[in-house]
Length: 79
Image (tube, rainbow, N blue to C red):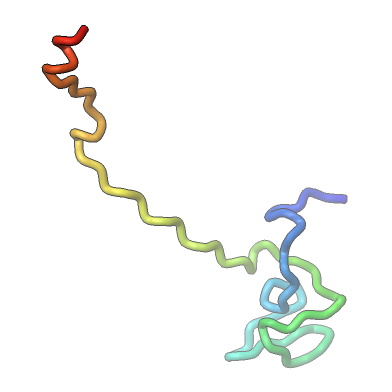
């Protein structure tokens, strides 16, 4: 068996099938005709190019002080 791009856990949906073509709100399946993008059938064949990746989470904002090693005077006296 070949390499699975996004794992073996791809939920079958017509919108991710290689036999599905977008046509307005619904789409057209080569085998079944007009179908909803969320339908599924036993002929499902995953097409990784039709997958829309999720957006990355926004990174936190840091200051320059977050990356400095400031040692307080009280800690220097103890050493």
